[in-house]
Length: 288
Length: 216
Image (cartoon, rainbow over all chains, first blue to last red; front, top):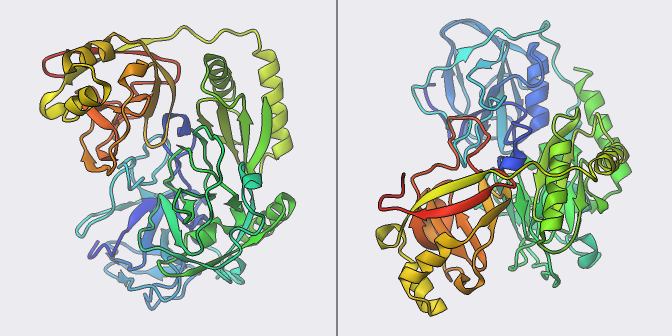
């Protein structure tokens, strides 16, 4: 690591099975970009890769490698969403983002780091799985590739209209007005991997008794000040704020690309439509 | 028991809308009986409900609902396993419990007696959640209930033993927090280098033991 960028961490798809101990999955903020990048270089989709945030790092390769940069274009001067050969001594220098919030550097063979509770993902807020990378860190490349690298990806459909999020009703949906979340919101600077805080029309907090309950990824919770918070990959596992809606699984990749000050709009869809969108996305992924 | 979709990949199973031992037992039974099922990714128990997060590529809402009903039917006569009893050594007051005097002032109970009452009570871990092994403890004597700070502290040390409203708690990590700090324990509820299970688990009984240094 010649430079680390703003926030660069090792991520796979996340750490599952520990929510009943209060440990959320973490994992790639844009899971589609991670999985696609891994498939492009011939890895399994869950291989560990580097997630960069807003400003990327510079990485010197001691040995030849096959890499893919996916997600947003961080101005590395290399083609994205395609396998690229690098030689021993090459430096891949990522810079400030030219589109969304996150870029993934996937390397054929995966990044070889110890797994904690079955996952390589760093949970930044708690330190589970390690810490963000720093200048001077050395990372080993693994040998877990399972097939040949693939041709460049075509049609990355999920990345159109990043700030347009499809939602389905959440547990307290009927306590809220039917037209809540119908105006445009902006992503707050205070957003992080725990939650995306939005700024816009305040949504009146509904009355009524509510016990703390389990909360899923993508839940939109309304605290007393009425400004929505979208629970993100490092979210708390339980919470007591009411939730009118939940972002659909097929749009989790868009959540991972939202930057501070980006505009966000919502569209209500049915559960069936949400699952249909996910199937389309999976079909695209496995066409790689 | 009611079952409701929470998102396109999760269901909420609700056993009641109050904190009760009966709901707690149901939550424990369901959480235990759903361990290790293919396609079920995470279980989020709470006071009276369990959120089930599943892989929508492998499971539908209908599938998971069917599994829940079948497991709860067959578990209906099962007794929860006997509770473990965990003693937590606490150093009360002073620099480790800077809010002990406030609790005494708010409740009108002398500090020495606050400590006695806090340490004499039996606590139940209703569930572990929020953020990283935070135990939701029931059993705080009602007379000790004290409202949270108006402005949360930016830094609460790991191991702080606290009162937040009618709840008792222990901070598993150093973090911001608005609960009243009455003591501190050297026991670690959570070790980021280690693997779970954490020190305290759902269904455990907890006792606080006054000590000079917060350790045995």
